[in-house]
Amino acid sequence: MSINTEIGRRYDYYKNLIVPNGCHFVVRLDGNCFSRFTQRYQRPFDRKFYLAISKSVRYLMENIKDIYMAHFHSDEVSLYFKPDSQWFNRRIEKITSITAGMMSSKFSRIVDADAHFDSRVLITPTPKAIEEYTQDRRLNALRGCVGSYSFYKLSDIIGPRKASKFLDSVNSKDRQEFLLKSFKIDINKVPEWQRLGVFFVWETYEKDGYNPITKKKVKALRKRIKEI
Image (tube, rainbow, N blue to C red; front, side, top):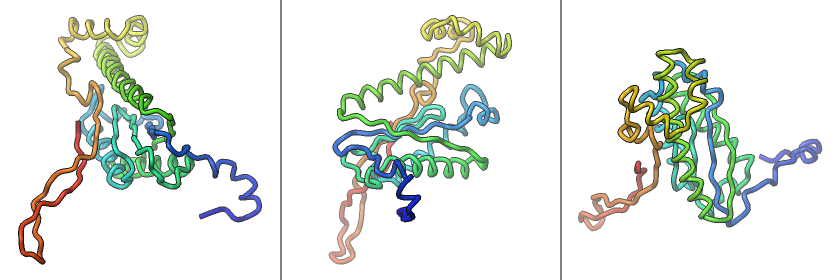
């Protein structure tokens, strides 16, 4: 509903801020203060946390049909919108507030605790930039996986402060070698959801149906979310 008062019309600065037509855009969600929130979970990765994020992302895709793909790792979620999406007339205020609200409420209900996500919109006129962003998120997931395993395994031995100081001087490749030699952890063999995150896409499939008029079996096309 529009703000029709004089003060509303004068100071509603961002009402007309939109994603330009024809541009590709991604909505990026991040957990707010999740370093503290996730202390209740197993470190460095917890399957219950992963499943809660997964169910929440599926919920967003099922209820916002303009999302054609999603990716998440840790508490970071990327929602890929169709370039021709007209969801809320492409208004950035609406897109960010509604996606953050939906993610926060759904995740909170699943874990039975108050959790909050922020949201931002990333805009590009070219699909190539979307591909580069996707690859960057996969690499970021890998760096985070290596860093998390290194930090928590080492913290158990020398404490978090010393572990952090030591790892600051070690790059991601050397951390992988360190994990393999010191803890027999091969990052290439840990579950993919930890290493690279998870991608969801829509797929079309055939389903057996029945036409009550012709009284014949028919094939119906349906859509479902697929993890890749």
